[in-house]
Amino acid sequence: MGSTGRPEAPLTNPRSERVKKVAALAGRSARSRHGRFLVEGPQAVREIVAHAPDHVRDLYLAEAMVLRHHDIVEVAAEAGIHLHEADERVMRAMSPDCQGVLAVADLSAVAAPPLDDLLAEAPRLVVLLAAANDPGNAGTVLRTADAAGADAVLLGTGSVEVTNPKVVRSTAGSLFHLPVLGDLDVADAVHDARAAGLQVLAADGAGDWDVDELADRTFARAHGLGLATSDELSATSLVAPDLAAPTLWLVGNEAHGLSRAERDLADAVVKVPIHGAAESLNLAVATALCLYASARAQRREVG
Image (cartoon, rainbow, N blue to C red; front, side):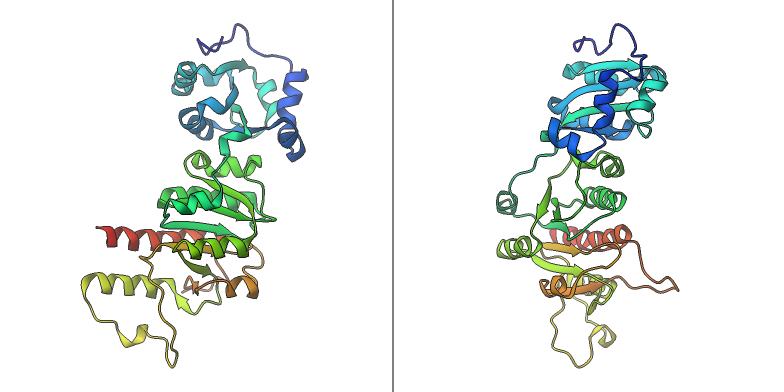
């Protein structure tokens, strides 16, 4: 049936063994045991079908979704992916969050090269999440890194698993666009990145440098302009980092930020200014601002 992308009859039994096995993949132990994970929702499924079709084992669509998402059905049929139609009860039993579109994929779909190999490709923009515990934030950072044109996302030991269903959903398919390496020792990863020519900037509210000021410096350098004295840190000998340089951004935990030891790993600590009364910024938002500051500076340099 994979050649046509259409099954002979819809799945109607929400208590079947197939449904139970699919639903179990929401748990980490089942994913590890079976070597498979869930991809939920039209956008994430659309991206894995387009970018990693060889790793998709089965595709499930609610009957009403087959016509609505005919683009997914057509690409899946061309790739020889087996499509199962299912009624709404079956889809909800497999995943209450899939919006009627679900794929089961091999863990190899998110396999990434070793860090040494990745760094050998001379990346210019990388983000390292030291201890990202919130799957929604982790997925949003990954999606943002993809949008900013980053070369890779790294996750330190203790971070949420990248195939956690909420992480996968939050990436909106970006998980299948760029390398994501997990379970890394943060200090070792920073050491390797620096040895490969990347500066290491820690994003933290206690930073010595303001990311907006650094962006202004980059603009001034690019246009041969002088730097206002207000941009200088008074009575210090700190050298301002260059946002246009190849950079690894080190980002901390959602609740506690970076530890002192983690900040000390960086070449500089950079803060996102808060001009209003908010106590802090969401981790994913702050990371987005830092990544885009680097991306803009790097594009300006290349241009």
